[in-house]
Length: 314
Image 1: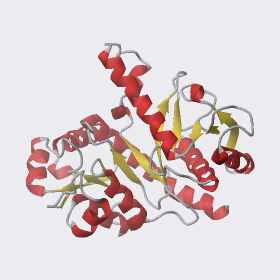
Image 2: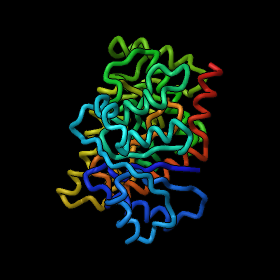
Image 3: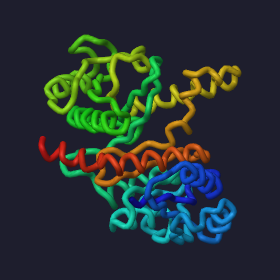
């Protein structure tokens, strides 16, 4: 098992990436090899200081794609960047998963054009974990990749989200809800009304019907499906809960503390042929550690293979 980690992605790179790698390897007993992709002049001294030099493979990448650069143009012009080299290693089978907290647009472009979507998947999607009041976790998708969606795409998101919930979140029979403005069938805008019958007839999922905003943090459904415009608003609102809790000095609350982004590391791109995980730009060491753990689990469970098989059968 080989995992590629972009050491140059993130506001605090490469130091936090190295610290996160240390946290991961300090408790890891498996046989995974982490490929550290970045400027060796910056990365090697940090790895040596943490005693990690002999435990990882360093791949020199002297260029970095900045946050303000145009994703497609930067990937084309900066072939020696950590993101470009990471996707090359993933596409050629040198690594089995790729992680980066760098330029989100470049990561999405690389995922869709270097790795490509699973055959049958119209649009890949990105999802986020939603803490539930009962202590469990739910999954919301899409959360920003696809602002405008068709009913067929939301139906596919439901299948992808169900597989992720089952194999990564360990929910044996995840239920799926469609985000709407009412519970009754026939409610909502044209998109919701057209999506409902598709979800109802989808044999790959356990459809529980429409859900409303008040159901997001409850236990009515495990997987919540919506367009990326709606999902991103819900995600940003949820993230603000932790910030508000810190400002009011109540962030030690057991439930509210679960909204801290670093608990989940990053978001996977679902629907592409190989594991690609995108981290927050302000990723800390704990976030990097959790991203590596997620990559390991996606490889171990062969999640992408299971998604491919699901779409082949349908």
